[in-house]
Length: 505
Ligand code: SF4
Image 1 (cartoon, rainbow, N blue to C red):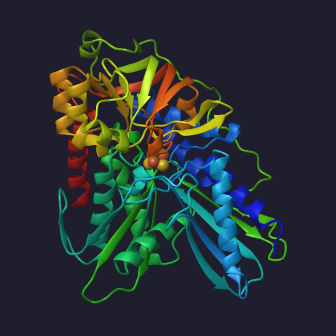
Image 2: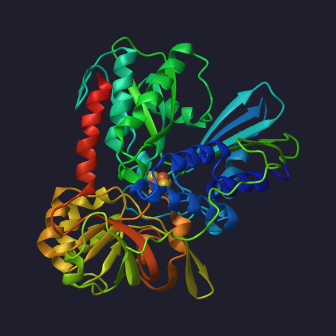
Image 3: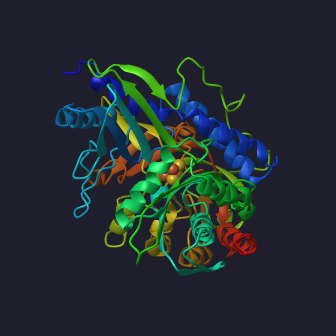
């Protein structure tokens, strides 16, 4: 068989998880330069830029959510796809053991994590034959936060702020704008969208995701679609959703549109939203040895240019130091826009922990605590655990539970990304707590603020879903929902809704 195939796939996975492709880096640099000094968006993008550099330098996962590995493989006629599939699966398991991929494959009924990213439907591997002699493997790692912001529209449809979207390119444009607006910061903006016009519900989503394999500077070969892509990009940033939904000048870094034939009765527009951590790379392999003959999307001979000159969080002197456990008085003194630096104990908790806490007492005393919506990448070294990537996850999933948990157990600060809803906002006010927005995807940046893993509870939920007891030092986050009924997320959604109306006419 091909002696270097396994090692080549492993290299592809590691590089994709840890090093953003040059076209995405360039777009993120442009975004950083476009924002005004001192704004929330600039601060968020500065952290993102540092995180991109840290990940590449230390070969750490750019974001702790390494997503659903999706491979697109082209092989010569007659190649043994059964063997290759097995090798790709083994390389995924090995990358997981090495902490380059987070264990992300969960039994949909029991919630049990397989621990190695293998299971029914994971990873996704598509094979196609071609007339060439070499093998091409492209990989995209797309996380859950942005996957949850995907959207599919059946035209004609009535859209908030935009009115009716008809079965025309103008109607398609309204759907795309609506999808970007609806994502707000939950998909870790600024993002990029892949779009499919037509197909059926299944092929539409697949083709939309395939558009994300095009580089951001690629011009569509179909002049009608090229014009539509350009017209979206010309206006979409007027939404002013900004990085992480903080408000700002850049909301989208790319829009790539494809089209499939459809049934006369159906007209779907499928939108695949990818976050700023837009991880996709590819390799071309020698069909006899499996060795890499060429990288796609990147030139290994060109050195990586750092996004920023300096490292570390840029302080303004106005940050508020918080030591956990936190008092009611400290919390009520905070207001939307404040930047806090948290030190002391922090507990992680996401979907499984929230569900558990609704029915059981917590395994630790949560009074005055900081609860971090985070599913970290954690590796065991001897008897010690070490966190290698630890950015926030999308908080809105915990909206049905969060208010009750704050009330029952006295949690004082919830950290996550994308904001939460009215029920949580009311609980923050009533019980004296705040919501803090960390920068989505900045997994390396935050991992460096974690000084130790002191313990872990509920480990049988799997490493991303367990409750980790962390000691952190000056972990920066922004108050985006305070104990006085204010929410930056609500404000930005309302304002950007007005902009959406203006763009859509
Ligand atoms: S950057 Fe945000 S949306 Fe993207 S994978 Fe990471 S947490 Fe998910």
